[in-house]
Image 1 (cartoon, rainbow, N blue to C red):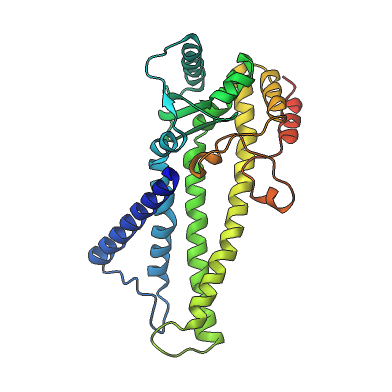
Image 2: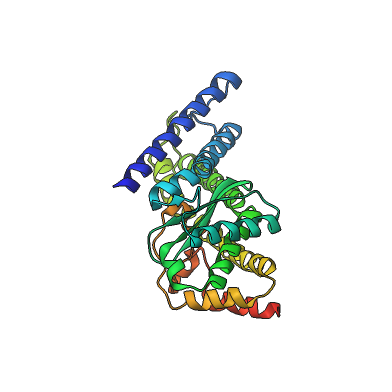
Amino acid sequence: MKRIALFVLTNLAIMAVLVLTLTVLSAVFGINFNMGGRTLNVGSLAIFSLVVGFTGAFISLLMSKSMAKWTTGARVIGQPSNAMESWLVETVRRHADKAGIGMPEVAIFEGEPNAFATGAFKNSSLVAVSTGLLQSMSKEEVEAVLGHEIAHVANGDMVTMTLLQGVMNTFVVFISRVIGYVVDRIVLRNESDAPGIGYFLTTIVLDIALGFLAAIIVAWFSRRREFRADAGAVELMGSNRPMINALARLGGMEPGELPQQVKSFGINSRPGGMMALFSSHPPIEQRIAALQAMGR
């Protein structure tokens, strides 16, 4: 119920900001965002597509820390209450110092083995691990997983993924409407002032089809990003063995479910077939092979 409420509130916030932004642009610059008429205003459509494409992505990024804490029930360690919490905080601090970023918030959440990092800024991020991960791994393996998450932060992966998602969204909105206009006006020869059924049907179909293509592209980039984060963990640990051991152990576990907002920064399951194209993480076997090839 909490996740449903958060999803609704987030989308209402996105729509409110979107409407406000388009209203301000229209009032200040005199831009007409009406897609009707017999001619296509490419400039207005491009601005409209940029606003629609990036608004949701950046709002989700800015809200990522608070959403992650709320949806996972993560408890931020303010003052460590036991030896494990002290070790966690100090390990994250050591990794952060070595990676050259500010000290992230460190949190623990209840659940099956998983971990994630999120946050809009490198020097104000969140790193969280589950109780299941802490209970099923050795300290060296947990340290490697923490190094992997710190590498995500140091590499700026959260912002990079947001920008990529925004670009993909923008192209989907823009291209679907341009093709919809061509189909409506040239193919179906609609000469009325208002867009016809051809425009709306084409736009809807292409929004869905191009949306799937965009998701595949984003997932491909996300998988490349995981290899870089694994390599970053090796740099922080000084050896590839702890990360290899951690991944090997994860290969025999079923990762716990994470909210969609931070799912791509956590431990991912292993989908097969066509679903592998949409996976944010490469197969563990490939990640281990890449680490072994580093020879450290």
